[in-house]
Image (cartoon, rainbow, N blue to C red):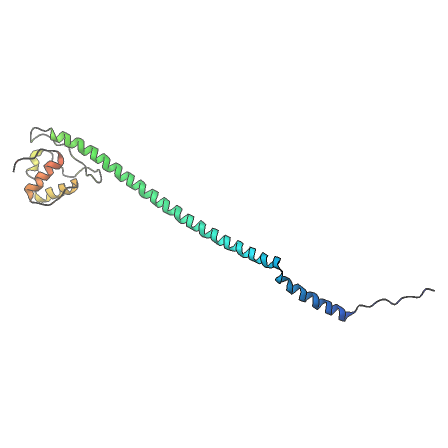
Length: 170
């Protein structure tokens, strides 16, 4: 009969020692350059992501500023268009007024040079200028964008000049 060989039994002490050695060796893996560089790569990627987010925020801010500037330019364009239109209207009115030969002829009204709105209480004829009060003369000069300095006679002369009439001797 064949002799039976005894079954080999595990050596628990050797297994425990091997496990301790393996655990110790695994903890040393973090010192490997490849893993250390991997951490550095991940950190660099995080930094790049933060920089990209910062750039994106800056671009959004710049875009908002550009939109604000565009709106401001549109507003300026509208105001400039209004001023040009008022200037054209006022030039034609002054030309008409400069051709008047009688104090009772109808004046062509001027527009406010800043708003292009018709000037309230614009005198109907050159003769009505002689009857303007100090307050009315001041209001009319203000609406025409002219200086309001001086006495009533000086203001009336300034109004005549501003609306295209010939000056009268004082």
